[in-house]
Length: 481
Image (cartoon, rainbow, N blue to C red; front, top):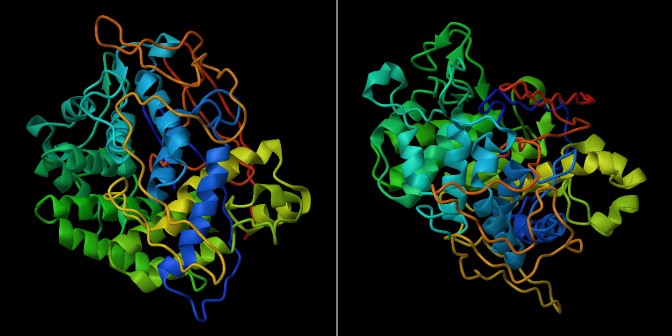
């Protein structure tokens, strides 16, 4: 979603995350991934489910955050837990497709965000819904229509945004392309062009860049961009997308995934953690979650187990939580966040950060590849003697517009969009989902677009341009090198 993060989307919204250093966790005697992560993943799922209200996760300023809500659905689907909450959330997202992949709610018509559409296609498939009729939309057809054709030259196969106005360079990135490959692979035939474009984002070293564009415009490939920054989060997403592409028979995908996994192994810290790039260079649970998931998908079990072990060191429990013991299961973005919560609890200001960190970190605990979420359940941990620990079981997949049987967490209250707790997607005569009566602020990009992580004492920098509507969010950043 991104978790990880999606740093740019549509009209230029972006997320900035803090630079941090995670707690060192001894790796002597690290257990297998199943023993390390399964119980922790279930606890994280329960906590995350409790953060939903009326089938959505709120953003830092109230109102549904559709990107984060999708990240939550992906995370809970990875464990197969909290089925009522997942179903309610899937229904809400289906009812608000255009609230996420456009700016219709804000009166800015004629724009469709390619990355957001690809992520919707993926989550519909992962949640067991029909991606060709999700809230009244054929997300597969829309995604295919947004893939650049042969006339795009070296940009052929790239997921792009559609707009009726000249908005400058496309903001799509490697997260978006990975979701496009994943969603198309899971919903039908996978165009080779989309895989080829993703492979061109890989440098000779094995890592992937986040952005295909430079100040001079799109560069043909990662190796042709001088000083290209290789990114752990983007590489983890690309590796998983390419593994899914290889399973679909795409040429060149398997070798590129292997080289990407090799590069990830070289980026792992001694304590098992990972950091991102730029402002997220410090070890953090978002990058560790995505990288650990990718390593497990690529068969690097030892390194995946080390990543899971590092993540459990940042998870609150009833025993170690101190003032935050009531939030047992939540996973901190970094050691500073963990220590602060133990001392003073999770404040209202910081809760958004914990939601985003937990959603992506959970992927590194469950270790079900993005290409298999909704199809496979995570490995189970051994049940301690005398303790009956139920194994998660797959719930019946929701329909394109599921009717939830209930939600976990706070008592239902009207959401910012005015949607009921039990959503029923409304489709206008033209086939466009009707916007909610009171539009919420445009969703911050999620995971895997999540991608997207808003973390530390960061609120978010969010820039909305077009039609004179501007929302600026100034975030606080705390560094702990």
